[in-house]
Image (tube, rainbow, N blue to C red):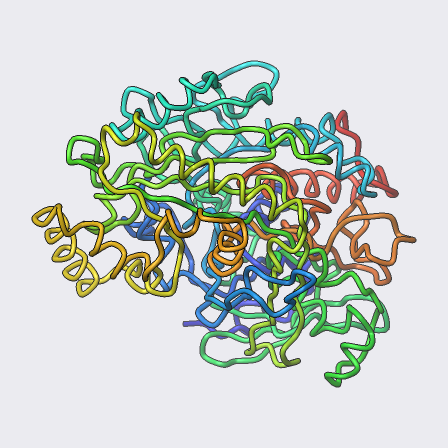
Length: 590
């Protein structure tokens, strides 16, 4: 195995991309299309190709890949709920899974491939991200995708990311029963989740190809042909300690290989694509952030930007599950678990249409127990609560402190409270009760997390418990309350709002959609971190390109919007290099 020094050969690269997630892979592919430009992509996790990807990664059932601890940052934790005015320390601290392998979230995520509302991107521009309106971003949504089901002005036909829908004919008895209840309440079918924005139930749009396999940016953008380019170097299992500066100009980064070898690499421009949690941490360790906080940790201040690590936003989620009768269960072990989504509007003041989302999950785990459970997984699709990422230590081996403060904004608490009551009502409706005998509150607790990790022991334990539930139907409610909900019941939680709010504060989790910690905005806005070009304000030769630059959270699973951001910034960077659009953001027509 070659050393870093042998691999890099003392070269100065045109572009150093730190982080090989969805955005980093996209950037590396697009920027290296021009043979005269040298690109170095550095990823802390292991390499992934279509040929070497394991079956759990390639499968269109993501339940094993996402909960495999080998694919995520093991020490990362976050405070989830809490932060309300009367109890700033409320809410539990739990592990927060973020991908640590090439392709990032696209290699292990839930595969949902949707864009959000046009108003999301108009909002970005209104918040100071000049040029990021719907008309400007739509061409890049089209550029990234190869839609297998729809054509027209809203869709792309030859992009790297295949997008398909799971046929309604394959919906399980549970999913069909939930949809029947929604139809009875007056909601209609939306055939295309990425079509005209309106409320209704819909087949899930997923990044799944013609062969029924996951589409990861690790091989959609970094195909064998792309990897063979002599101007592209990809380093995996290599971490970045910090960004290096001469004065206020970024000149590269300090690397460490998996064997412990240290090497400084130089670049004419450095692009940070480490994600919403680790990009702000990297900036702060390198001297860009709130000056007082950095000085207290002994970090030399390069640029005082108080917005670094702030504006952390997630989609807060809660769920209700049902023990399913045998005919209503998913019969295929390796089919996608989320077969349908339901988009609806809360009609809460200051909230847009389609601000709520419900995933109708046919199977709630990879093991035998999960196959017996259907789940109504509902989240605030347009969240307003803001948290923060702060350094725990200047040492890169220490994970940052992450505090989402979910539900700290009253609009989020009000809507999730109503959503819990709504899905509890659906779960206990006549339609759903015809295929289920027990409905119960469900959350991603430490116990559930522990048994979600793939392994022989967990498989055996869940098999035994599932058989007990099947064999002892009269004992089922007691067994679920004792071993699954840890004493909680729907009736007790729904008794009054005070009990429900306490339950939500302790049980709320995220959908692994963090955004906003290096937000784009006007240069004279002290809370902005990046300009609309992704350039970090106050320094030169440094950009951020990932979900952290989103000024607000879109009404969508965030992987496809993140790829769009990278596609658009790649175009801008190439145009700037060619001498075009040297100021501001490139137009959609460019």
